[in-house]
Image (cartoon, rainbow, N blue to C red; front, side):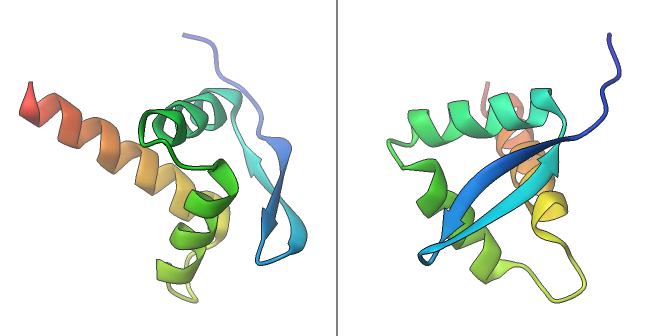
Length: 77
């Protein structure tokens, strides 16, 4: 296992450019999940952004989304 520093990744949310700092493994998993859901990554990120609380940053919310998606898949299999 290789530990990584977060890298900035660009997104467009509601017409505004923003960036999130995510480790490449989380970013790749997020992109894969969006592809499998047949959803544009910006739309999925906007949905996550709208659901997160004020105490949770967007990068953390994306990490938690990825974790929950992968845990759901493990429990189904």
